Length: 196
Image (spheres, rainbow, N blue to C red):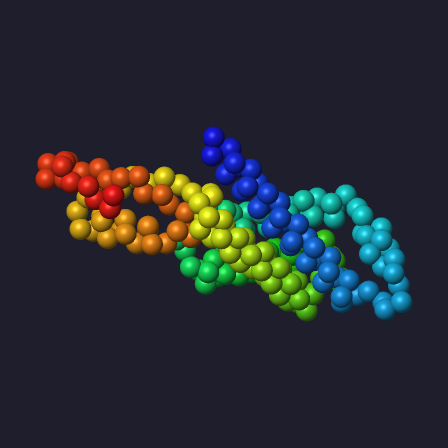
């Protein structure tokens, strides 16, 4: 039952990442090329560039961006990873997205996509995705401290190392693990209670 909810939240995360990258591209083009007095710039800009070849390049770009985030491991669990490691993964994925945008711009002969545009796109993409991921991490830890979004854990080994690990998990409620017990084949543990 939890796999279904995990798949749904992963799907929402993937769609959000792509929406943020697309929004970053749109914002970049507006910031770099929109005249100050032209409110309809976005509509005019898109109406000039709607072609089958551009649509196919756009679809390929979206697929490449999705793969860039997936390959960097951004859709795997980050319960035990540090924030800096997750930010490095985001930075590498955004760098791949920037390179893919440059390649697509060369293939489609898009004059508005140059190094300056791609650099601004990268800054906006990284900033928006990093802020969203850090807010998500903060919210999940807050929920786990309240006992929501937890996972049950059965440790194999009741020795010193297993008990220390269990104590560390019980001290960190923000990780969201509920220790239900230990499994060990040593008969000396059969009558003992470890950590309650």
